[in-house]
Amino acid sequence: MGRRTAAWVMGHAGWCLVVSIALHILAISVSPPAPLDLRVYRDASPLVLSGGLYDYRLHTAPPIPLLEFTYPPFAALTFLPLAQLRWKALVWLWQAASVAALFTISASTTRLLSASTPRHTLSRAILWTAAGLWLEPVRHTLDQGQVNLLLGAVVLGALAVLRTAAGRGTAVGLAAAVKLTPGVGGLYFLATRQWRAAAWILAAAGAATAMAWQVAPRESVRYWTTLMADTQRIGPVRSVRNQSLRGALSRLLSHDAVHSPVWWPVLALVTVLAAGALFRALGRHDLLGILIAAELYGLLVCPISWSHHWIWCLPTMIWLAHGRRQLLSGVSLAAWILTTSTRLVPLLIRWEDNLPRSGPYPVLLAWPGTAYAVCALLSLLAVATNPAHGRGRESGRITRHPQAA
Image (cartoon, rainbow, N blue to C red; front, side):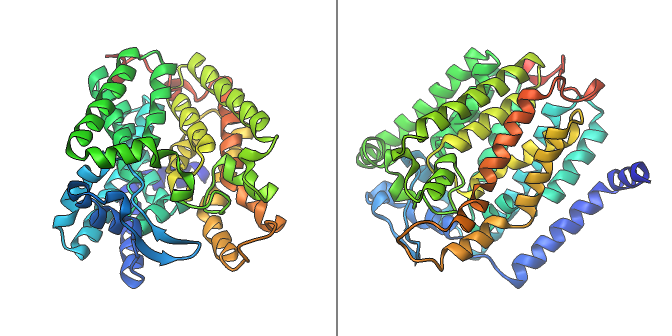
């Protein structure tokens, strides 16, 4: 019965996606989102031409009463066309582009994972898109009008589809020039010894940054010399909104973990675990395992990793679901499903927002607030301990992979 059900679902993947998108449209029609990040992109970007890009403030509510433009100047240049669109049209266009990007992420992930027939791979990608639309990081990205899905699609699409080192490296480099976090993809190129692609990341990101410097020299100086390292400008490190390793430890300790003697040993242990996962995945020729190990490590060690940054949970869940069955993979997948489908972080945020702004952080809130970090660590352990991810043609050990060209 289980196989019959799975076969029926695979055969009706398209209808599953149609229903999922229809429910999404219904949800945002009944309760329209307030995409504050998209408004910042739209309203602040023209200021890159006149000065004052980093003086822009969008007034919201505590605990982050002011939203500022926190990306490099090149991002503002990229967002300039948004200012020409009417707000309602922009919101719907951004929603459509983000859902399309989610499909690109799912399709690219299955391409990195599997050498099965195109029809089977397409059905799998469609089903994961339908399910992924309801994961909390994806919902949060859509609600805020964030750029995460679009950049994730650029990175994964480049790795799975583009055949040349110049194309792959340039795509990742330009994504990193818009928002620094996609630069973690460079670890993938280094781990797989794609030296030319890694060099193209630096060349593309450098060229984009230099162009922005020519257009907005004063804003570029401000960002690269002062603002880039100012995490307080982005938001409170201790907030449960921040699901990085530093955020999780800061809530447990009731102060910024980076000032605690436990920070460096914990960071070292996580780095060793991530390195072990990378090398074990590399030894298995597990392309997707290498990528998710790099991305999860980047999310863990970044000072601020808002829950909407964790869209990489979807490629991770695909890896865990379709590889060789082992206990740790099943536990990790169950933890991701529980954390992302129950909207745990938004529930914790509502609790946290009613707390006093000073004093020790409540233990009952601190421990559940480690959810994303725990899921990431479990997944890294699964990558590191899986002896041979996948079976047969689904092993990820693909000889005719686009990156071999």
